[in-house]
Image 1: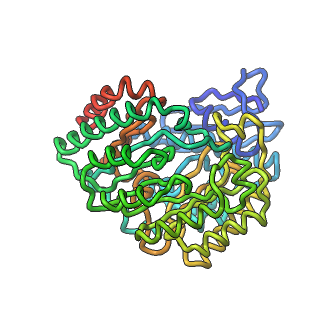
Image 2 (image 1 turned 135 degrees about the vertical axis):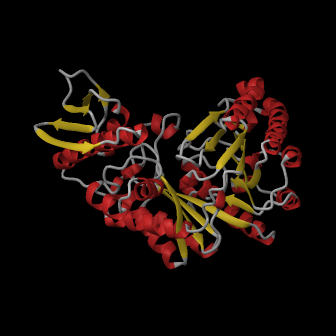
Image 3 (image 1 turned 180 degrees about the vertical axis):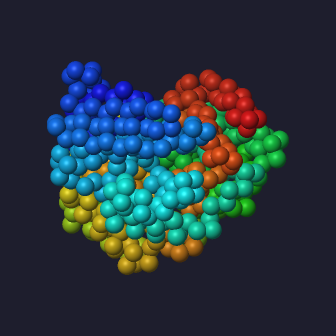
Length: 466
């Protein structure tokens, strides 16, 4: 679909177009078959969308003295005009209506707090969110109640390990296969440890207090015990939550689990993605279904709180096979289960192969997972959405009551500043007055990070001097 807009929001309009399954291409006025024309006259914003003879327009008041809110409203109504035109054109209501953002729960709170509107009514009647997804938002906000501490002196510390033992076909992360990057492991660990020390010093100098620690990846446990010990040894003491993404069952050993207990780690992930061996093989996971059971039971013997990830929509996995995966994870009874919807992103092999998942089947999978997990006593407690997700759906973290991962809530709801170390790690400062967020991104690839990691600290210092 060829798009022309005279406003600033082509990207957001294109996201709505793609959500309906159309290609989106920026075009000239003369060639476009979807036009979005917006005009701000004083404090009145008028927008009109036209596509194939269908037209929708809005006229709204924008606050003159609040530029951020004014832009937010202009963007919202450009998207709404586009959405309702395409809804009429296709005869489809999308599960999330006109919403294309990553964090629906955060938007709900902002609508309630900053605009003085009832988010339930706004989501349902204006944004066209289905009752099913609206109930999901309500349940997550309930599960987060009392857990979002907005004390500006508290920060989380994230440490990124950009290595894996193989590249999954659905993965678009910048992590590299560790067997091919052995020559970079030692210099990376050395640089990372130095950046951690400098960042911890920054935390202390700024009078900040550490809330949660999180080591993610990649797959942190793709590193050998000695390298993990070097990293853990320079981390500050954390009296709160300390999580390590162990991820791949075939990277977990007794020695690594003992090391984690020694340094106070209290949460780990063991991520099957599926309990069907043929599917594991098809997506280039290098472990067996038996590895999942063996390493889960081993980790439970150490007393860790455990999260397990599953993905709905993997190649060759039928609805019945996915149901088997959900039933298996429920039988194991981990504290947390995260159900991801397959997202086909640039950089993944599946994207390059033009893989297409069945939208209807994936929606069935997601619905079954939620029903089964709810019946087993799991509560949805955080959610995020990504571009190019099958059926415009979502990723949802479920937990047993009282076992919510606080770092996930902090990160997804953006209530706590995060200082991040490592390649492709992103530091975020949350400004409590006004809700402003600013970011500092580390270099993506390992070699550039090793060469320039010290420059990241200067950017972090500048960010926290503001």
